[in-house]
Length: 354
Image 1 (cartoon, helix red, strand yellow):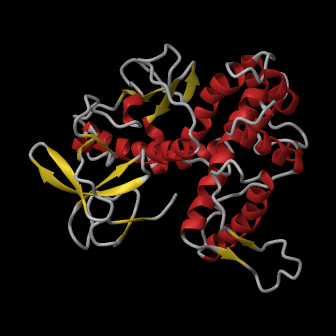
Image 2 (cartoon, one colour):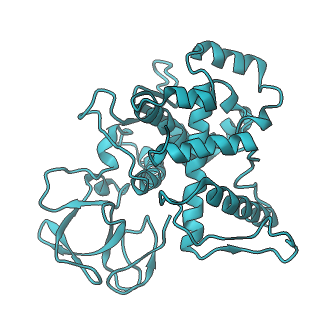
């Protein structure tokens, strides 16, 4: 995630900001230019002002009214929702203030997902445009009917249980399921990996190439999941998979690896924006030394560039967290097999799979 600045006064601002604390201009994120705009109200719309301001008219996404989105759309356009929110199909019951607070967390994570999708120029299609287009439903358990919402994906429809936005509940589930890492953003990145398997692998003509890396996806999916939950992780899974769940089925291996590719690239993008250099004094062989001075989203960037920088940055992040008494932000070890799988994802998103 890049660092932004207010076009009016050059104050550093962040991705979720809606107002500049220095000059008090309204702020809105414009995805096509990947820029934060300084806005002044003009009637029912806003005018972009300051550095780079061209006087164009903008409106906030309709979900700005609920305090969950700060993205803007062209003032003369007919679309009321931004490129991220137009994929929402079901949102929580807004009559309940607690639901709104949880939805805010959902949308923060979802917009960070879309930031990366847009930087990688990945295709985005709504359910209105295609029967298997991308759509999100944010659902709550229904105690009257006994319905228990499960996070998952089905032909482009991604359901995220609203309870996952409750930090205490998510930690409870993480512990119960023996997961080292469980976040809202991680859910979004994993589930959308399934959708892009459909778009880029199945529909993109890359089934054979993907099966050569991740295995035979024609294996019975439900039976594979039942075996995973009944028998536990595969013996020696660390050498082949990025997580225990990745070993359940090739589809889950792909989605888990896809999610980790997004974890890695977005964090490296943040490291570059902040000018991170990792150069431990005791690292005589430069194993944990890296200067993150490359555009991680550029097609010319290699998976070796990415993995070398990530090894150093992840080690530093984990060490810093331990100094604060916090859990490792990246409690994973990337084997050579997993790095090869990450390389496949890297080539896939850049259109280089043969």
